[in-house]
Amino acid sequence: MTRYLLARLGQSVVTLLLASVVIFVGIRLLPGDPALAMAGEEASPEQVAAVRSQLGLDQPLPVQFAAFLGHVVTGDLGASTRTGSSVTSMIALTLPVTLWLSLYAIVIAVVLGIAAGVVAERFRGRWPEWLANLGALAGLSVPHFWLGILAILWLAVDLKVFPASGYVDPTTDVVEWVRHLTLPAVVLGTGLAAVIMRQTRASMIEAMGSDYVRTARATGLGKGRILARYGLRNSLIVVVTITGLQLGGLISGAVVTERVFALPGFGKLTLDAVFTRDYPVIQAVVLVTTAGYVLINLAVDVLYTVVNPRIRVGGKSS
Image 1: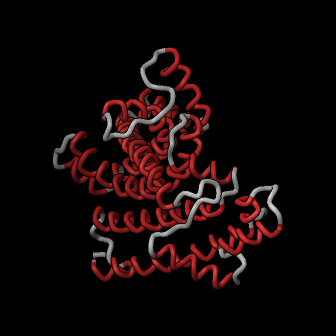
Image 2 (image 1 turned 180 degrees about the vertical axis):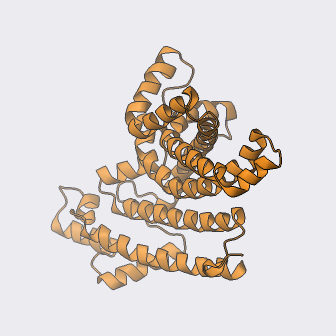
Image 3 (image 1 turned 45 degrees about the horizontal axis):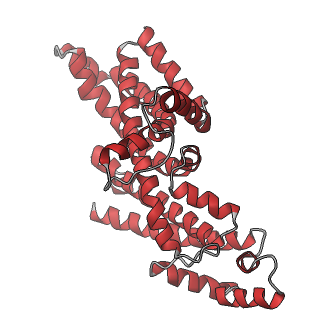
């Protein structure tokens, strides 16, 4: 297990290094001049040149990349060309909002998805399965922004059950924090819940038709115990994999949801940076998002070996 973890850690470091090269070069290929954006449209060529020198943009690309990598290693992601604030502190303020939103959405998606998948398998060919399939189809088809607008109009404006927008820090008021995050989390988690429901149902149907389940039935075990012990347990491997891989997608998808519900999260920071051509912030958020994907994949691989002990290093199985 230790050897496997070290190997995966090494692969993750190499992936991050290659990703940093792609991000650095990609940002430099974007149209526009960050020095001109920082100096202002009315700035003279001398002022723009001074800003370019201050940002280090007049240096050769390898030198700029070495400086960039050195700053990243030390946790310094530069300063915003729009506000002059530290990018690291801006990310530290906004990222927790998006992480809380994504984790809340995952909890909702896993609970709803597994429950609907179990119900669909348990009542196969009857109206509960039809209802679960219809809900999964709606969850995959309805865009997040449209579902968010409908949720705001119905649950926030008409029924006044949840706030329509805003965010409250959990250290200030936990109840208000949950109320403000519930609607965005439900909207963000619908797509993942639909995927988990379908995979759970498919895995359970496959498991329930296997030889060991027939043997379990022959020993007199009830259908409920067989579902929980064999069907649901096998489907958890798929659920863990999908949930881990989708976490990165949820963080990316939170951009739209945060915009609809006016949450001061990572998505809002990203959009503001794109609209104002704040290149240091764009570069940092892409790098942090990529690092998040890599770390999530690493955690999924580790969890996968825990859930399924037959998996060994190099594809060997017990």
